[in-house]
Length: 295
Image (tube, rainbow, N blue to C red; front, side, top):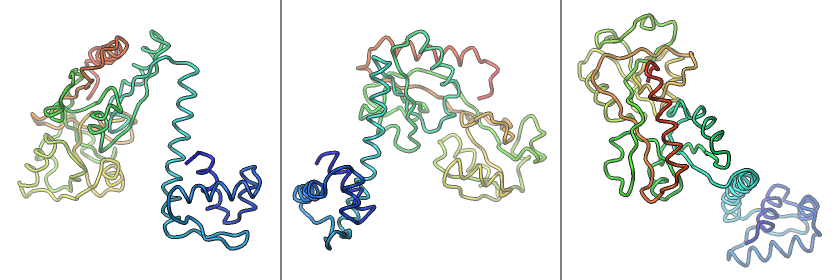
C-alpha cells in the first residue's frame, strides 16, 4: 500500500466520482482506477462499488477509509515533524505528561535548555490516560508521574521534581474564595465534584468527606468537565495543585490536610544521554528556585 494509493482512496471516498477524484489528485483516470484496483487486491476486499464513472463505498470500505484517514493524518504530522527536526536539530527529548499545566515550568525550561543546547529539541507529548504504557514502549524519554505510579515500572531512574498539595477550586465569586485555607467544616453542605481518575491521596480525602454525610457529591468524568461544572455553579472540587494553570479563572485555595502528591520525572536507565540529564537538571532548578510558588 503506497501513500498515493491511500490518497486516491480517500479522495474517491469524498467525491464518489472517478473523473473528479483523478483530476483532484492530478493523475489520469486510467492510472487512478488501476492504483485503486491494486489497493483492493492487496487488502482482499472491495472498497468501492463501481457504477460507470461513479462509486459508492461498501460497508467494509467505509470502515477502512475511516482508519485510512486517521493514519494519513498521523503520517502527515510525522512527516512535518521530521522536516522540522531535520532542518534544525540533531537530537530530540520527548516529555510525556497528562495535561499541559502538570509541568508548569516546562516552557521556561525549554527556552533555557535550547539556548544552551540549540541542537536538541524538546517535544511535549500529552497523554491523559496511557502515558505509562507509552513510556514503557519507549515512545517517550521522560514521563511525568506521581511516585505511587512508579512502584512497578521496571528499568527506570526516578528524579524528584516537586511536592504538590490539595486545593479547593471554586468560582472567584464564591464566598470560599476569600479564605486563605479551607477546612472540612468550610465545605459541609456543599456539592463536591468527585471522580475523573483522581490520584489515591485525593480519593482518600474525597471519601472522608463523603463518609461524613455532611456534603453532597456529583460524579465528574475528568478534570476539564469538573472545571465546567464548577464554572456553571454545580459545585466545588478538590484537585492537585499541579493542575492549576494559574490563569486566574478560578480561585484555588489550599486545603487543610496532610495528604500531598510527590511529583517525579522518570527516565529509562538505558538512556545515558548528557542532554537528557542536563534538561532534567534545568527543570529541577526552576522548581527549586520557585520556593514560594503555589503547587
